[in-house]
Length: 383
Image (cartoon, rainbow, N blue to C red; front, side, top):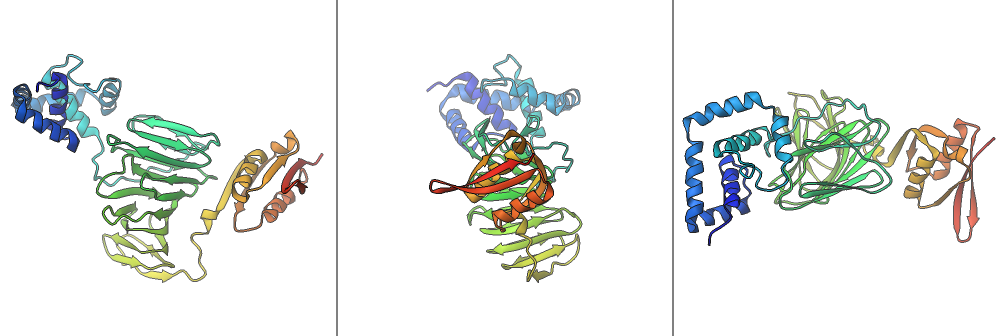
């Protein structure tokens, strides 16, 4: 049965450039076998690709167009048949496809950590081809990116992906005084400490699950023996099946990895080590790996603490409602606008935290009142 010519051309271009999906590759193969027109297009495009002039033209194209210009130009075309539908010749279409393929990030490349220059005050998400997008609002945010949809609310991000979701890398950046939780499409959870980044492939559907971490993070990884989980850190990689552990790369010359439950294997150029629960390894580049028992150390402690950096009482109260499941009433605007720089330790009673705030300024006071069946925390400004 004859097929749409533009559709055939698009599939052929993707096949020649090496970016076609397995499903589309099978469709194209069937077309070429059954449709003479499809076979003719395949032969025509293949011959032009083999033309000796193509290599020189491709180099000239690269020298006169930046990667950003190429990708931007392609993104602006809303139809799927983006290469031939605009009247470009076959050779030019192939050039754009091939060059675009070159500037894409290969799927199996280990990402280098993003430089930690945290100039923004809020958590941010960096998607390919877009400026930083602020996260961390109490209101739910929904961000569509191709065949992936990101949902964000209350310092948490999760996303879903379709079969055509991008395999390009994205990054979450957490500034000073903040923490943030990312739930990956496989159900794994990563809690990022302040001044940390998480880099990941958006689709997250390859034969391995891989992320890159700079700073500090606590990871709860869902088991999937068919798809190992790899965490890239300076000078090494952590191999995971299903477990909970902490990664600290703040000093890139001495990386710290501590295991809470399960088992992980730390692999460096110099050594390989399997950690058992309640063990930690501090390693340096080129040196052997030696595990230590945690004993009285608690590298996981930070994940249950919540830093506030010049934060309004209004915003602090929202976190208290979430963590302690209580009702809070701020009795006046002046109290709501008071600001504090402190750390909330969820291990300690709420009263201890409130007493600390009260001790910092004579303008802050609080009380608990019974209202019906509930106890309500009242916060007030002392004039």
